[in-house]
Image (cartoon, rainbow, N blue to C red):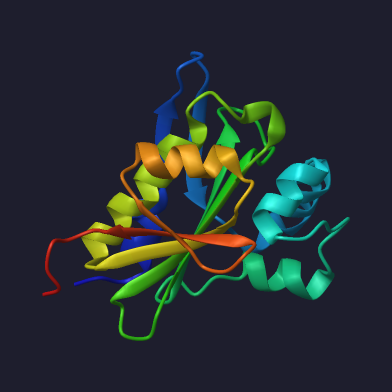
Length: 179
C-alpha cells in the first residue's frame, strides 16, 4: 500500500556525481522556505526563464509556502543538497493528476551545478518513483530554446512535440500499456 510516508521515504537518496561530489535527495520540507528562496534568487535569468517561462526576482511568500508544504499523496517535491551542506542546488517536482495516471514534471538545477549529471540523476530518480507509484505517463513543457532540457529529454528517450510556438511538450510513457 502506498502511503504518504512511504512516498516521502522513497524520495530520499544519496548519489555520487561524475565530478566525484556526493549529493543528497530528500523531500522538500516546510522549513525549506528560506533555502528555496535563496536558491531561486541565485538562479541566472536564463535558468529562471527556462524553469518558470518568465524571469522572476523572488518568489512571493504565499508561493514559497505552497511549494514547501507538500501533500505527498498528490505531488512530490525533491530538493538536492550537497552532502554535509544546507544549500539547495536543485529541485524537482511531480504533480499527479486526480486519476494517478499522469504526472507533470518540473526540474531546475543551479547554474554552477549544471552539466555534471545532476539533472539526469534527479530526473531518473523521480521517474523511477513515478513507476513505483504506477503512473503511466509523465509530461512537462519547456521553452523551445531550452537546449539543455531538450538534450536531456532526448537522452532519456522522451517524445518531443510542439505545444505552441514558444514551448515544447516532453512526454515519457513509463509503461507500455495502461494497467
